[in-house]
Length: 175
Image (cartoon, rainbow, N blue to C red):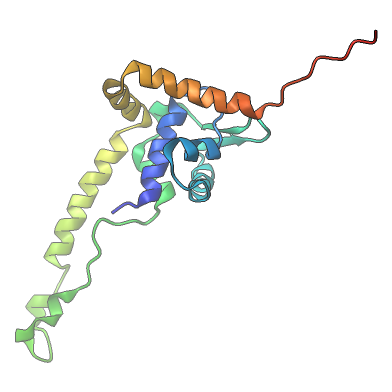
């Protein structure tokens, strides 16, 4: 099963997909009430996989590296949780109490049928996730969330950004 990193990545990328300006990891973590250090590690993996691009500076943050419709959910999961499998076969088929010291060949020959079944299921899941993009997630989210919430989210991120930018003071008059 995919871990918390996968969930954090997908929720964060969903937010980036709805924003045109860079968003800081700290703001994403605060918004979602998740640990910012862990999310920073997730973003390191997303950046390495070329799914996001970072910009430095007080107004910096991350944006999607390409349009949301060109980023597959499976790509995100592979970047954050590489080599994650749905099922780990422990090969217990040779340990049946009825086999005494040695399991018969019929019991251990070939691939474990349960493992094969689960591998087939995992391929179906991976194909499905590869067929879905971040844009699909955005559409699903926007169907569910009230427009007011979406507007409030945009305003929240904008306010966070504005609060980081130093305000320039008017020059003192010389008189």
